[in-house]
Structure formats: structure tokens, C-alpha cells
Image (tube, rainbow, N blue to C red; front, top):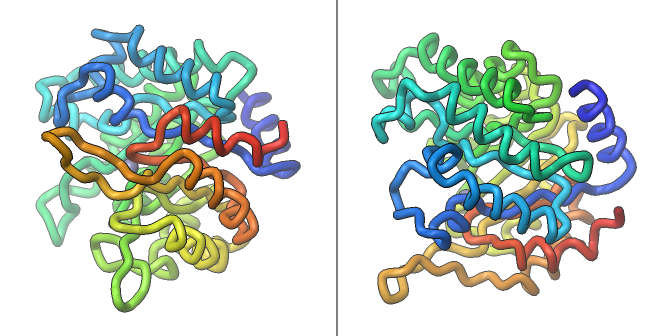
Length: 298
Ligand SMILES: [Zn+2]
């Protein structure tokens, strides 16, 4: 594992890295009901999860993200699987690892636990930290090379997850927040600015920081946001993973409007603004990643 993280760092120092695209919307295309626990598919429909990883690797992605976004005991508990954290996360990491081989690195994906920490909510920080650590340990056990803490809104929660991943043995941890545009600039759902969001995860040991899954952000917004991320990243590499536009309901199906060509066209601007890793979030597909790949010399 050490050598893979070392090769990741060496490559990142040499050239920008291409992430993969959405997992959830890809699984929905393969029959997952919206709102269902996609992590259960790591065991129940492993072939379909593998299919998504293969499609992204074939598209040229350098990174494969495990299908474990909702893999904490808190979120799995909503699907009656709160006691299956280890099995589902180990399985998810194994599936991505098997496809990646030596051609890609595996990001063990950790999303929000789905509640609010005290004092705003009723979740106890020590218990949430244990849940993140349990998930991170399983992801590393299954073969994840790095840990990705993503879609965060609360710096306290993000810092708990980064600390937990490091404590579980992760050598390299990526932390990304979800920002939306307000009259006062880019803010998380909790109202946190980029300047206020990053210090907590940097202090917790995040090696790479950035943004994913913005709400109502255009690709132009992502370019402006990237410059702001770089300004507050304390010299750490910056990752940007835009949505393919905002979800719209069309004939009771969820649609995303940003095309693969639009994604590809914005890549040079994101890189010029200082992004070192670019991938896609909700609605982005293997076609998006394939179109972006021409900007990443291998
Ligand atoms: Zn997303």
C-alpha cells in the first residue's frame, strides 16, 4: 500500500490527475432505486458495481471511488444494515481494487453521517468519530489506497472524519466540501466560507482539499470557486469534482444537463485556476470522464 500512495504522490507532483464520475447515478441507471442503500450492492450486485468501476477505468480515470458514500453505521442503519459496516466497506474497496490493479488508485469514499453534531443536533462527536474510524479501517482493509472524505458541510464533522481516517492508518486523506453560491459568496449549507472550512481539515491532517457536488453551481462558478479553494489550501493540492449541473425531474426521471463536451471544455480553466485533481460528481458519467481525459497526459 505504501508504494501505491508514494506513486500517487509522485504522479500528482508531475501532472494533474483525473478522477472518476458519479457512482450513485450510475447505479440508478443499473436499477438501484433512488433513496435505496447502494452500498448493499457491494455484496448483492457486485457485478453491477464492478461494471461502473470498469467503465470509469476504460474512460481514462486515474482514480476509482469506492461505492461506500453512505457506509457509516449511521447511514447504513437507515437501510437495516448498521451492523454490516465492515463487510460492506471491505467488499466495496475490494471491488474497486480488483478493477484498478496498477492502472488506477482507489479512493475509499466516506460521506456525511447524515445528522448534526451537538450542540446543533443530537449526535455525540465521540460516537460519530468511532463510526468514521470503523468505516475507514474497513476501506483500508479492503484495499483503498487513499481516503476521500466528501460532500461535507460542517467543518467539525469533516475534521472528525479526517482524524478518524488518519487514526485508522490512511497515509493520504482528501477532504472536500459542498459549496453553494450565495450573495455573500460560496458557502456550505451550514453557511461556512472556504476560508473558515479548510483550517479544521488541514489541522486534522488532510493532505488534499477541495470541493465536490456543488448546489446550483455552474461550471463557470466552479472556476471561480477553484481559485478561492487554492487561495485557502495552505499549499496543499486542490481537487474539484463538479456535478453535471443540478438535478431536474423530467418524466419522473432525474436528469443532469451539463454535457460531456461542456465538462471537457472547462477542464483547462479549472487546471489554470490551480486544480490538481479534477473529476465529476452527481450526474457525471464515463462519457464525461472520457471527454475530459484528453487534458490529462498519462
Ligand atoms: Zn454529488
